[in-house]
Every structure is written in structure tokens, then in C-alpha cells.
Amino acid sequence: MTLPFPRIDGEMWAGECKVADLVAEFGSPLYVYDARVIEAAYRRMEVAFAGVDLLLAYSVKANSNLEILKRLVALGAGADIVSRGELHRCLTAGFSPEDMVFAGVGKTEAEMEAALAAGILAFNVESAEELELLSQVAERVGKPAPVALRVNPDIVADTPHEYTRTGGGATKFGIPVDRVMDLYRWAADRPTLEIRGIDVHIGSQILEAEPYERALDHVLGLAAQIRAEGIDLDFVDLGGGYGVSYDGGDGMSVEDLADIVVPRVAEAGLRLILEPGRFIVGEAGILVTKVLYVKHSGAKTFVVMDGGMTELIRPSHYQGFHRIEPVISREEATHEVVDVVGPICETGDFLARDRMLQMPASGDLLAVHTTGAYGFVMASNYNSRPKPAEVVVDGAEVTLARRRESLDDLLRGELG
Ligand code: LLP
Image (cartoon, rainbow, N blue to C red; front, side, top):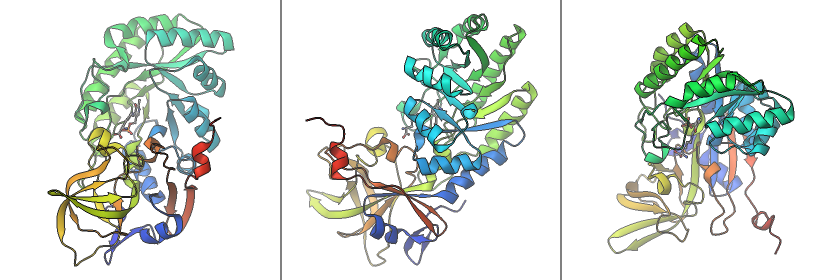
């Protein structure tokens, strides 16, 4: 696969634009997304799973910028949402509510009411307690709530960090298998609830098809039992988690996954929902940041950037590895092992540790790859730092998708 953000004569491009020109116009640090890379990932999944009735419910938490959401609407995507805020964004972006599923272990009554009123496809319910509250809310609103139960299959998938494994029995997610049948029966008896499907999500940044195979067999087995009791199901939702390339190697083969999933789901006569987030937007984004200083301290060399954990928390929070490259190569430069760090007052504020890098100089730009997912959305204002701008490039067309925050933005909402 050709990597996005190619290099021509030592200089990095986004679509038909030079990355350095984008920074000259919009400042640093800057998130840059290539819309064509997003579209290619979306189409790749669509093609791979063409043999089933498919809803690609983009997992909005990965990157919820309105410009990106609107482009996904145009591609025909549905949405996987986890909050009232995401519901609001998706309605604003133009997603059809009937293509939205609502996940999360801690849905509030207000969130249930809003999603019910909007007419979403299904609540992916994570506990008996939530199911009961949803039934009460539906009664009050006077409209049955569409539901799927999220099963915890007790499958621990291999992901790069324990925080992104969700299918194990010891996590807070999903309903334990031994409770699932009873809860379907309970729901089937309630006119306030309308059973739509069954759901599972085992984790994030998974590269192998095998854990999905186990999870799917598990939920299809349950689906057969549920239907044998005369309870109708429309869909199976296999969640998200399809891994991308962080090191320049291959991400998940969704084609291999489809070879396993498509025949089984087609045979079961169910509609398939997938909730990819990172797979759609991850490789389509870079975070560009400027070198402030190259500092030698003891045995170490620190490349101090104008962006750090406030712009991208993944290295610090999950020990996540992101490729880092100069935006413009200095062919004459030596390579050295350095720590790439941000300006924030925390030792944990780094983008890379002990990384071999072409030695940059103050003022150079570095691009941090594979930051289209869980990048900007996890950014914070810690140290009172305004959040960076986001731009979307589509060939030669550049759209400022979010302006850089101002100092006034930092004080908004404060009453002192
Ligand atoms: N569906 C459910 C129910 C989820 O909980 C998630 C992610 C997804 C779908 C989408 O997963 P994806 O396809 O994007 O892997 N901040 C972490 C990732 C957290 C994922 C949370 N749930 C990171 O930066 O690695």
C-alpha cells in the first residue's frame, strides 16, 4: 500500500499541497487530514464487505470534526455515538438517525431521551440497570426504545495497550454471557422495548481477524438461541477496533476479516453493523509541530516541540508509537537518538522516546503520523494552551475545518 503524505524531492505533501505551505498559512501545531485517504479507507471496507447487508457506523469518537463527519455522510456512512454531544454533532453533520447506534456504559436519562426523540437505530445496552432505565424513559416518552444488548464475550484480544482491550470479563463493558438470555427474554416482554440486534466490541487497534472470528461465533450462537425463543433480530453489530499502521507496516486486512465474517452473517440472514473509527481516519491525519529548541542535557538530546501531550496524548497515555518525520528533509543532517518532547510541564509530555531521527534544527517542522484518530479529539487545554487548527486537504482544495483557538476561547464559560 502506498503511504499517505508522500515525499517528493525531500518535501512532504498532503494531497496536492506542500505541508510546509499549510503551516505557513495556518500556523503550528497543525492537524492535517487528507480527505481522499479517508474516502479510500471507507470504500475499502465497503468493498470488502459487499456480500452482506452492511451499515458502516463510523465511530465518531475517533475524530468528530464536523467537516470530516459531513464528508462521511456524503460517503453514505452511519454513526456509532457515545454521548449527547456526539448525537448533536451527527445531527448537525446530517447523519440519518436511523443509521446511528448509541454505545457506552454510562448513558444518562437525558441522553436516552434525546436519542429516542431523534429516532436512532438502536441503543447498544451494556447492563441490566441501563435496560431497565431505558424502558422507563421509553414509557415516559411514549415511544418504544430500539435495543441491542452488548455481550461481553470474555475474549481478550491482543491490542498494544491494556486500556484498549474491552472484551475481557474483567472490564466494565458489556453484559456477561450468563445474563444475556434472561435479559433478552425480559426485554421481549416489555412493550417499551423493541429488540433490534445483538452487539459485541472486543477492543481497539486489533490487527488479526482471529479474535473477531471467536467473538462473532459467540454472538451468532447466542443469536440462534434468541431466535429459537421466537425473539426476532435484525442485525449483528461486530463493533470496531480494526487496526491501522503506526510503524509503516500493514494495518489489519479487512479483506481477510470479511472472508470470515461475510459468509457467516449472510447465512444467519442478519444485517451487519461495523463501527470502524481508527481504520477510517487514522492514517489520514498528521500532526505537524515546529522544533523550538534542540537541548542537550546529560547524555540525552531533547528535541523540544511547540506541540506535545496537549495536542496528542497517545504516546504518553498508551505508550503509543507514532512515526515522526521531518516535513522537509535535511539530506546533510546526521541521525541521532533523541527524545521528542512537548513544552508542557510534565515529564510524561513526549511524542517519542529514544527515537532515531534525522537531526532537526530550531524552526524545522516535524510530522507525527497516524494521528487522524484519537488525536485532536483527545487534545486538552492543559497549561492554558489553545487547541490547534485542523485542515482538510482534498487534492488541491484546502478547508480550514477548525480554526486555532484564541486566548479568549480559553476563558469562555468562566465566570470569575
Ligand atoms: N465501538 C465501540 C463500542 C468502541 O468502544 C470503540 C472504541 C469503537 C467502536 C471504535 O474503535 P476503533 O475502530 O477506532 O478502534 N483512545 C484509544 C482508543 C480508544 C477506543 C475506544 N473505543 C487510542 O488512542 O488508542
